[in-house]
Length: 243
Ligand code: F6R
Image (cartoon, rainbow, N blue to C red):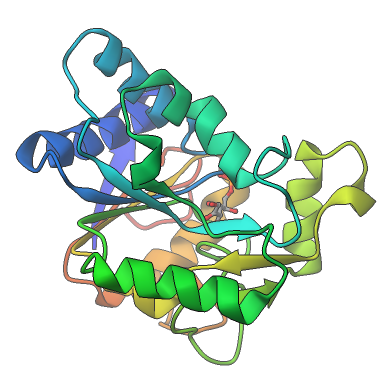
C-alpha cells in the first residue's frame, strides 16, 4: 500500500485525477471502477476540465460504478445513476452505453446483482478501481461484517452509513435502507486501486485501513493485501497515521 499525503481536498483531487488520467492515456479503452459520494467530486471536476482542454479523451473508456441504492429509478436525483451523469458523464465524451451502475430499479436483488457481476467478470475486472472510504471503514457499500463479501450483492445499510448519507436527502427517513454493491472480492480483482480520503471524520478509518489488522470489521483493511493500491489522503485524514 502506497500512502501519498495531499495538502488539502484540491490537492488530493488533482493527484487522484492525475492517476485516472494516466490510466486513460496509457489504455484508452481502460475499464475504470468509479465511486460516488462527496470525496471524488473534485477529481471528476478536474477530469472534466482536462477533457475540455482536449487533454483527455473518454471515447473508449468503460466504467463500472461500485454501488447503487435499491429501489431508486435511474433518473431519481438521489440515485447514483443520476449522480454520475451530473458529476461526470454528461460533461465528457464518454459513450453512455459504456457506463454501468448496478440497476437499483430492479427490485429482484438476486437477478440485478448476478447480472452486474457477470458483466464485470466478462470485462476481465477493472484496470483501475477508484474508492472512497466510509467513516466505519466501508468500501462500496460493503459494511463491517463477520466475513469479507465476494461478488455483487444486496446489503442492509448500517445506521452509521444511513446517518452519514442523510445529509444528501431532504429527510433522514428518505435514505434507502438497502443497496446493491460490488463485493470486496470483485474490488480486489482490480489491477490497481486508488483510495481517496479527506477530512478529520475519516482519520480513524484511514488509520484502520492502512495500519490496523486486516479484518472484515474494517472492510477497507483488506486493501493492505492488494499488490497495487495507492491511498491519497489529505492532512486531516492522515492525522492519526504514523507517517
Ligand atoms: C460510494 C461509495 C462509498 C463512499 C463512502 C464515502 O459509491 O462507494 O463507499 O465512497 O461512503 O463517502 P463520501 O465520499 O461521501 O465521504
